[in-house]
Image 1: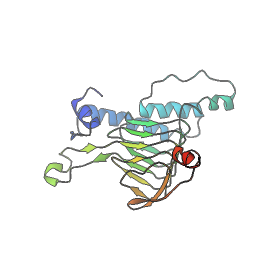
Image 2: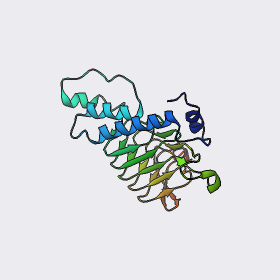
Image 3: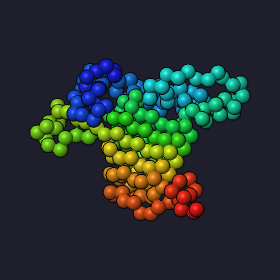
Length: 219
């Protein structure tokens, strides 16, 4: 998939043709992987991780099975997120999520460009990450016949994203932030701040010992 010229243009944030054969093949692969994840039912943590890694194209081998179910589950605490389906991801290969992160149900991810989520991040239900964009000029957009593009989204470590939040293309949410439920995040949020609203605006700074700047202020 990654050898396609359209794929390369897509990752660079340039206009590309979304109906490229290789792009469509990967979308089909990712949709099938999401369907398998979503219909798996009550399976072990190991099986959930395996299905999750199929979505994002993570080919790392799983660790050897520990005969104790609880200890086997704990093997993945430092390597993978906890994901509660159903989940819908466009490409999967451009989606990176850190360990100790929880992704709640009904997550929608349009990973046209790279989308990263750090470690120990909490997502409420019904969160949408919209990395895809279309030209504003309808003469260029041409409905389903024209090109589209995208921008990266980055959510840093220790962020809490409330339920039904939308994060738009090109946004970076800094470490330690909280985003209020129902917000539409259209611009960057600096580390250790609370933002909410539509469009989301920074409301206050979050006091935390994790913030290096606040630690300096104490001395």
